[in-house]
Length: 365
Image 1 (tube, rainbow, N blue to C red):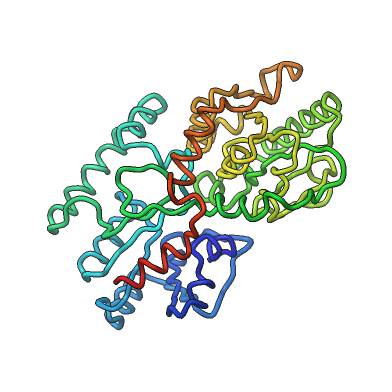
Image 2 (cartoon, rainbow, N blue to C red):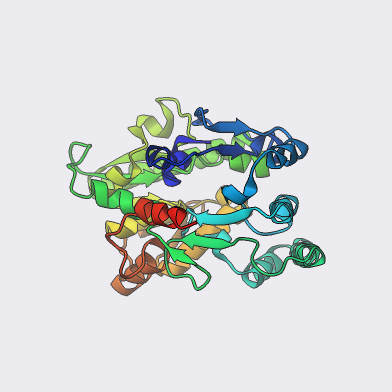
């Protein structure tokens, strides 16, 4: 459990509204080596150490009077968990809070085609796993989506109930607030690359020389942009980041204020962060940047390429371009509007409260 996840799922607000809330943390056995720097342990948190402990907890729970909201992607990796919830006849909902342009938005066929271009054996392994997952569920009598209700922001034909993205409502709350930075500035949306626990979990053999080269490239690029545009670069640090004061060339590093920083920035520099939504809502010029080292991380690089393609904005590889060629650019107005209504909100609910939508749904069960 992190403070960000607690906010995105409105857990404290639901408790205040009278709901009995528990957070079943499966990470101790699903991702035992994953350590998050902003992890919290609220009194409603239950750490589950093994699959058998989860089974025992389900046996002790009146599942007919309990709504289970699972943050589990459908597929081979989560097959045992999803099958267990279905076999126990749990009311299983998915509130998808991560909606943005990203690899987890790709169809199975899009993922397969991408992997096929990168690694043939990996692509076929992915395809086989997908088929095995479907056959496993079919064999146990479960067809189609494992979730009884799918709730998400944006325009998706599979959504049972539309809500606003958390970032949409967060931006509306801070949109009229004054700047927290004196003077003109641009902002870099940090991903804590490559030290984020998820990067380290998936690609643990990070090269210290490559990391140093990446950070030096970024600092040289920031130096150039500051001189060229007469601004200072401020770092909107990722919630998981643990930076020393002298990192990023002694530039100002601020956590938990990404929306506020983007709102008053002259332009935004980023890789493939989900915080792209704030930049689009604020209609800011964007610079997508990468490096050879960033490109070696398959999923983040695929996400970044997709962002660049969908917004029709250049992607600059700092290992190969001339810095004078880099120019901040705004997304086309039609592309911007399409993004807002495809991922962040839906016509007719723009001013509605997602929390109230959820409370109304829960009370109908």
